[in-house]
Each structure stands twice: as structure tokens, then as C-alpha cells.
Amino acid sequence: MPVIETVLAPVEASSAGLVLAAETLLCAPAERRGNAGVPAGDAEFERSPVDMPALGRLMLGAVNTDDRTLAAPDAEAALDALAAAVGEGPVPLLIALAGHGSTARPGALACLSRASGIAIVRGANGAEGTGGTGGTNGASGADAGSDGDPDPEVAAARIAAELSADEHPAGIVGAIPLPGVDAPDAQQDRACAAIRSAAAAAHAGGVSLVLAPAADPWAVAPAPADGAERFAVLARALRAVDAAGLDRSRVILTGAAGLIASDRGDGADLHRLDALLDLGPTVCFDDLGRIPNVRTVVSDHDIAVAILRAAERGAANRIVLSSGIRNKHRLTAFGGNGLEFAATQFLPYLRMLGADDAVVSAVGGGNAARMLARTTNEGAGE
Image 1: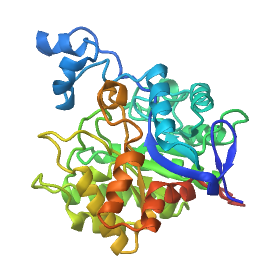
Image 2 (image 1 turned 120 degrees about the horizontal axis):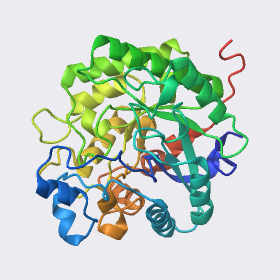
Image 3 (image 1 turned 90 degrees about the horizontal axis):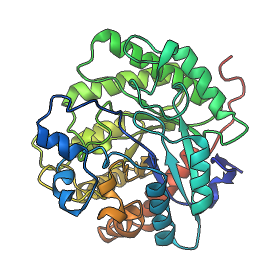
């Protein structure tokens, strides 16, 4: 029976219900000294606590340290709200990704899972410690290159250790950042080397790999892709995955809304969706539940339409969902839609637009559960 490795104990993949495929739960930005060259009014707002009068500016992307900080009480309340919304039935499951900004330690995730009753699968990214905030991938110290990139071989060894840990093991690899479109060739080479080593570790461990766009993780809206350039970077990264022996079907690509955003800024470009699906990874729409504003390019409605398009193409089995919450104002306690949005609003809306039960079940959890099921790769890495 295929099993999913959670931070508490393995669970049968068939027992999973709703799955949120790309969350952080615990995060904090790197500290900035002084006003960092910004106007005094903006610096004061950055240091202010999140409250009702601040919500308008926060929704439009104003920088605020408290808004970018999710502590254990915030995560616990968010998980409790999700558990209450889902109610009795199959076990809700959440993937807590490692990477830039994450402060989620294995023990902390285990406590949150135990308290809420929600199964949590933690990601491993190979950075020093777990959930670092420095560098591109949380690396620091002697193992990091001049640009903060971890040494690929050292990172792969750390990933393998996290996947096989006796206590609170990781159950997925990532999120590993894609190289930036404008990055110099040498930096792109290093990023692809890191992706290849992470993919090799995922293949050897029988788990999936999560790739993420190199973008501000706290942005209030996904940045539109840079057209052909972004797809060229993604294709190169996926070739690195191929070289590591990991099948592209075991790759979850986050930031999908930004990748399919229209250059005109008026919604999703379904031709870009087709191109993305043709590349072969599982596509993660991980920004559900944002309250629309003037900066919204791809709405939740656009994402629902994109899912129906994928279903028409026979690719609904490669779509997973999440809320990707890193801003406090997006939590239910602060006026947002919270982690429960997919279960209580998006999936019913998708069904209202015409999705059948099979599609709703697949994108709501079935696909992600399949991706999380650990496989055995005898001889991998030899």
C-alpha cells in the first residue's frame, strides 16, 4: 500500500483527503537595519503591527515586517480553522515547504500536526539546518558559494539525511528555486546544478521534487512571466531533472499563475497553460484565496477556467492546489480567506463551473496524494 511520509508517522496515500500542496506555515523575513533607504513614512509602516487600518496598503503590497511573519500561534490558528472547515472524513494533509523565508523546524511542524490533527509533510532543501532565511536557498557558512548557493553535493547529502531521519523525516524535496530569467550564465549553471542534485536525491529517496520561481515569496500577487525567456529557463531546469533520472511527473512546479499570466495583464493565457502542461511537470496553483485588487492579473476564476482547460486536454491529473500563504493579512484571523479557502470556496466553485467529481477529487487532493506516495528506487544513485 503506497504511503506518505509525514512528520509524525507514515499514512496511507488512499486515506488523504484535501491536500494543500505548497504552504510555509512558519516564516519570517530577514531583518533590515534602520530605514534601509526608504522614506520615513514607509519605514514606520514597515515596523507597525498588522491591524484593520493597514489592510488596504498590505493588500497592495506595502512592505510590513509583521505581515511577513507567521509565528506558531498564527499557524496553529490557521490549521485549526482548516480542520474545522473540513470536518470529519478523510485526513486533510498539507505540504510545508522549505526554502527562502521558512522558519519551520521539524519539531515545530510535528507539534502543529499533533495539535491540529492535520497531517503535515515537510520539505527538505539541503540548506544548512532547516528552513533558513539566508541566500537563495537558505544556505550559509562554508557550504555556500559566493552568491549564497549551497554546494550541490553537500546539499544532496543533507536532503538524503532529512528524507531518512529517524524523527520527523522529510517527505518531499523543495522548494528548490529556479534560476532567474536575467541571471548571468554562471549563476544559471549553479542553479541548474543544485536542481540536478536535489532531483537525484529525490529520485534516490523515492519522493517528489518541488521547483519554485525565483521571486519575492511575500509578493501580494504573482509576477507575470517573462514570456519565452521564462519557459526557456524552466525547460533547462527540467532537463537537469531528466539528467538526474527523476521523471518529470514527479516534479511539482509552483507559481503557475504567474507563468500563465497574460502579457496584457488581463488574466490567464491558455496557450501558455498548454505550453506549461506540454513540458510535463505537475502544475501547482498555489496562490488561491487572495482578495482581488487592482494588481490582480490571474484571478481564482481564471485558475478555475485553466483547470477546466487542463481537464479537456486530459491533464487534470497534473494539477494540484494550495493557498501559499506567507502574509498575515491573508489568514482568516486578519480578514483573509485562510487555508480553508480551497475546501470551502474554490472547489465548490470549480464544480459549479462544470467540473465533475473526478476532476474535483483529483485536483483537491488525489493528485497531490499520488505525488507524495513514496516509491522504491532500488539501485538509484549507483
